[in-house]
Amino acid sequence: MIVVDSNVLAARNLTGVQTPLAERVELVDRFWIVPPLWRYEFENILTKGLWARQFTTEGALHVWQVVMARMADNEHEPSVQKVIDLSARYRITAYDANFIALAMEMDVMCVTEDGELQKKFPSIAVSMKAFLEQGITGGQVREARATYGARRKKTVR
Image (cartoon, rainbow, N blue to C red; front, side, top):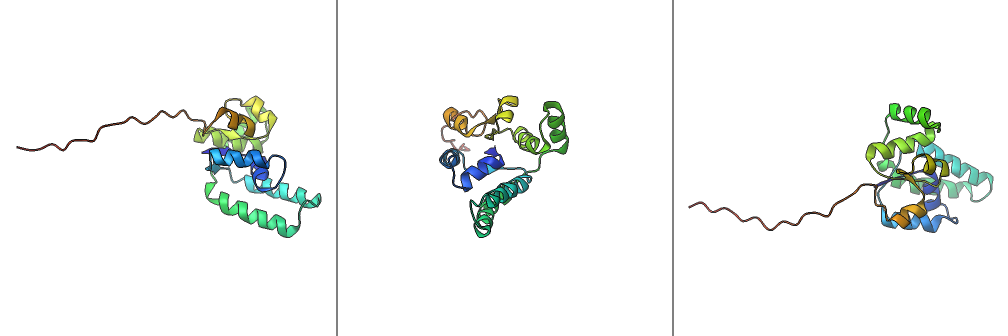
């Protein structure tokens, strides 16, 4: 499980130079989570694409429906206290703090192309390229499962 920010969602769902990277990130970790705020940021990304005539209104709505169907069940609301604390302490927007707070609370990595977040939160926020190079799979150290022999049934005499 990883937190992905809106620019990673856009890279994955709107064809561009970063689409292959986003697809590879998805192959490494398919369980992407987001704060509900992602909806508004993604709508802004679609709107800017419309203004730039990169796609039609129908195309934007189709992309929205596809992404919404995938992400609606993967939304998690971070603590408002954590968001405000991070915003104040690190001088980042509340928008950015939502993604970082969620990653902290879920104890996972935040995959983002936002260089400022990568600098301010190097142990949490990583680029798609760094995520792939480091083989990060959710930010948690996982040990191999112990192997146990089959339990023997006790016989009563």
